[in-house]
Length: 84
Image 1 (cartoon, helix red, strand yellow):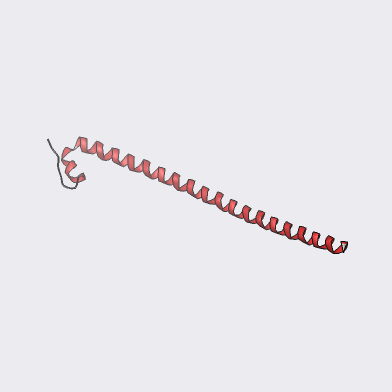
Image 2 (image 1 turned 120 degrees about the vertical axis):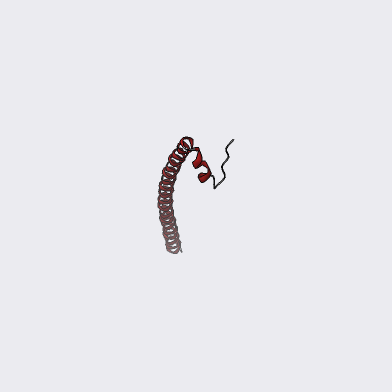
């Protein structure tokens, strides 16, 4: 009877080790995937920031052009000239 219990115990330990190793492998896979997605998010944030800077620069140029050429204000406001 004792050899059977030893065999069953070894079998249970082997199953537990297999399950634990599978869970560790899955955890590592999802952790790597999460890190990759975070890297992609950071890259997209940087691209968005660069785009926003370009938009701000263009808006500054448009505003300075409008100050120098008030008649151009109608063009940039869709044909509505708000002269006072």
